[in-house]
Length: 302
Ligand SMILES: C[S@@+](CC[C@H](N)C(=O)[O-])C[C@H]1O[C@@H](n2cnc3c(N)ncnc32)[C@H](O)[C@@H]1O
Image (cartoon, rainbow, N blue to C red; front, side, top):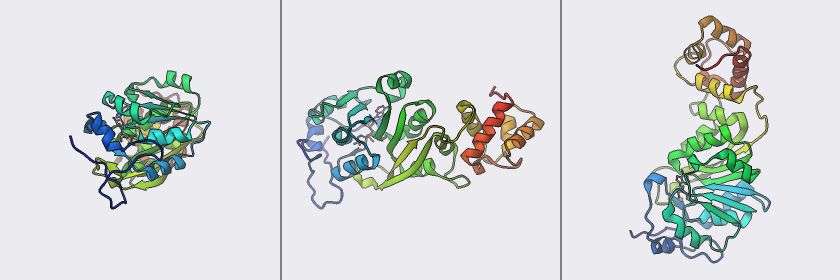
């Protein structure tokens, strides 16, 4: 397959060097190894050096940091991360990128690439090896939300997640309650992390060019950001609140936890939530109150 990697913002039709040091032209390397892009893996690569360096700067990575990158692609972001970090551990699902990465990362000895599906990796044992770490990645869009949810629900040692995602997804991650973008994923993230959009990135910055624009989101994890007695109960409270957006919270409680109406009313009173409230109007703090009330009443999801 013939392709070129266009340089954004430049009038030259030519491809440009990736990285300031010894890395050759990305397209030449990909072609040399007979690589063809796979849509099913969400392969839209970044080659613009300024953008890559900007992402690393926004992530605030330093020489003592361990960085995890999910989806290394041709290794352009990996290289930029390796220049700033103490260590980079990258995951890449596509083994066809092995020779490409061997070449683009040849001079980066603080980098280790694991050819594996990150969604199947055992996060608990991974965290035993790594200690505290940050994630910086241009995420494959087909698994953005489940991937972020993995960290929110399971990770114990993650400090921040600085990830490129579709711009509408970025807005959902950072939304405020009672706005159209606010949803279960917003509330789930808010329990553990401050979320902000730190950069908008137009689609033309990727190759191949995707159908949507992107944004870089920074999630900064904070211990006990919103105190809650039981994180699993918070997850259930969030799922229940967004079970049916048209129904009141009271009705969602009845269906989700198989409660009597009387019990549902009592729990809402204890959580200081109006009976007629709808899930999407509840702030993450209110949802934590609801989770605590559910815990106090010993309610369990059947
Ligand atoms: C959007 S591209 C980013 C590539 C590169 N980091 C860049 O910025 O140019 C996403 C990368 O994730 C890889 N990928 C997709 N699903 C994956 C998974 N489940 N685990 C690990 N890597 C995955 C794809 O093969 C692809 O290389």
